[in-house]
Length: 356
Image (cartoon, rainbow, N blue to C red; front, side, top):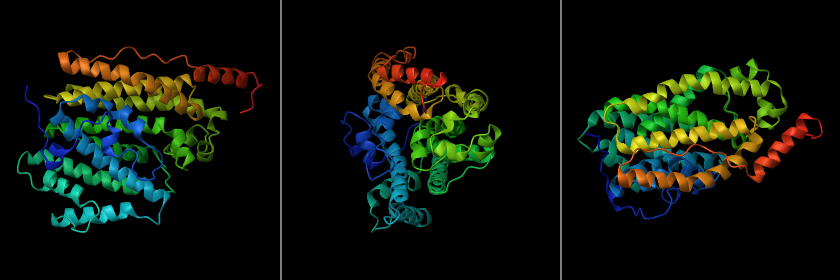
């Protein structure tokens, strides 16, 4: 079976890939961003470290680029007097317009790699142009959505955000042929949806609510209730989340399933598909198990991730070493003390003995 090959860059062949976790290689903890994303990157892409070295290098390179601008934008949001993201944008625009790297750029080495990838390669130009266009959209989206006064007004605006962020993100990743980019785009939108769901509390703590006002108003939930982490006390909130997960989300997921049916999908993308779907099941299961209480979700979810990761990585290794179909064990949410405490609190709340 013929698969698309990613572009070879000097960095991808020279990087030391022996670190135990992907977060060490993609800058998950670099800069003062909203959170240390180390565990997030393990949850999202820990499987990458089980790939053969040449393939692994291509994935880590692209994830590193994406992670960098995300963290630069978050750093600038927290420290506007340190405009590192704006400097990056200026240097990127110079490369985009001239095809040359700004010599004084703090990220000159990185831009040299981008230049080799997108501007200097004569092969597979159609796929390269699609990847470059996706990168441009992603950079613009990071600038657009990393603001203190972000408000998503309509469902259409929310879906556009999924497209600009998640859809573009996935189209930047390696080993996609020209005909596979659209399927990757649909899958990326679903990924972004689940990231928003996972990060509801973290975002609220930073004054960010990605839920569209149109959705909130439909169920009588206010944006302030989300930000103040009081929405769980509004009777309309669980109804809203049921609609969000059971009626809106399936419309996104139907198209996302196209990814596994495209012709000649690279084996690394097949792993991504199965790994990510298992992650989505976990987010959904924990969120429901917490009765949609996003203030409790994070503690339960990340505890479960830590328990799942060694098992999932073991299955990826078996898949790679023995050419076995990749199947993860049925998802089981551990009956931890955190769960028990949460369930007890919910029972007390329902009986009026627990003050939220």
